[in-house]
Image (cartoon, rainbow, N blue to C red; front, side, top):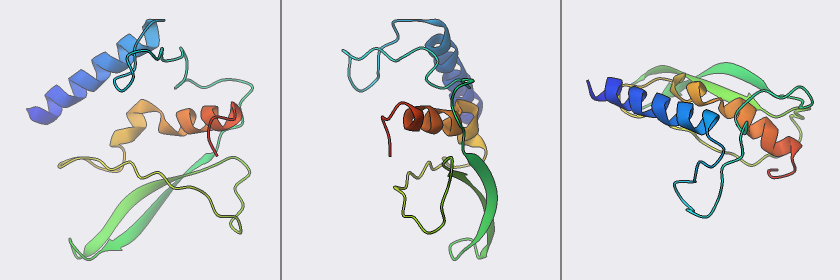
Length: 114
């Protein structure tokens, strides 16, 4: 029931943020969230989402995960890392309802991220 309420709450927040031009940030009340920040844009080159697995000592099993690689990824280059961790009962797909791959690529395109 908690998971259903959480998903409903997130869906409502995303719906409002995608349809309102003056949505405020939860962190900074003076910051307007740009419309389309999480949407696919035709002039942006997007990265690749890879499905991987790793061995967890905690669960003693292989666990699935997703990795978002930036456009023009070079395996010989070092990149900053952002970990998006799901909560209890979630899985590796939970964050992808919020389009993190598109948000990251849009920020890279705009020069607002490395």
